[in-house]
Length: 358
Image (cartoon, rainbow, N blue to C red; front, side, top):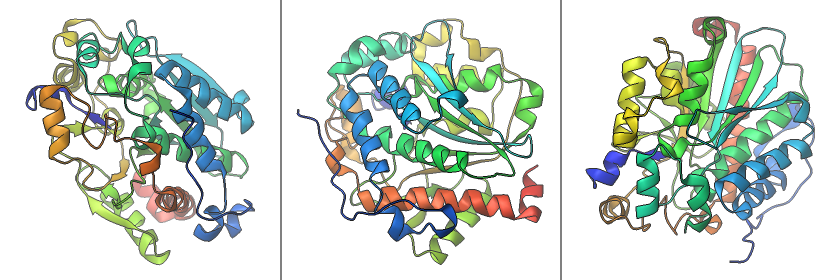
């Protein structure tokens, strides 16, 4: 989750290999017979979180993502794209073709961040220093956002094994923590035809936190996608609530939901301050908008996040030493995966609803 540098500025106002120990075990079977109980027996989500967390800095986190893509036999579906002129981080895009050339995007960012003076300097340089300093971060980047990446990769594996009506793009972004730069650049590079063919976008960022509920974000998500998600959670007895993003927080859904030159420049200005004066690829974007649904943990930030942002110390719930793999709730991780998969299947099968998105 990207907490705007206004939390740095308004608020300045913007070990050993750890493991996620499974609580239950079992073997993945056909998707039609998939259930929460069976998903909780899978080790795949757990090991993906561990692989990313144990990789170290952001450059190695992308390598860990590529390793998992290879494990899932998705390398032939995958491309790596540059973000822009200043960022050495890259986006990873997995494309799975369906019967229709209508795209469902599943988006999560693989990079992590920390609140400290070096990161503050890197933010004002649009994340230029991130690969050099990210290995020093106190944060594991487990909650924000190895959880979202693990779920997205598992969904890609499932989708690739099925005959799907729609085409799917799983976008794993870099530089989200430096002003949503990965998603902003990706949206700006899309052709008019490609963007118009987006059916909807699922963004998964900072879910499965111990002591917190998973939430669908109100005020951000398409009302019908939000309602579908809540209905599924009630039917399947899942822990999902309605929540709102914290003030000044955003994530990779934003450039898809609504963008233009002025909106993109405004995002750069709020996140990167003087870095906004540096020319960026994402400034060359037409006015665009589409349907999104965002999943994040409820009430994720507290006073410590704002105090940490003020004094530039990593003491909050995220972007700090408290973002550890030990705080990932395994049950909620698997439930979020199951809920997202059920949402995908629901839209695939509901012709009347999907036509309202087209």
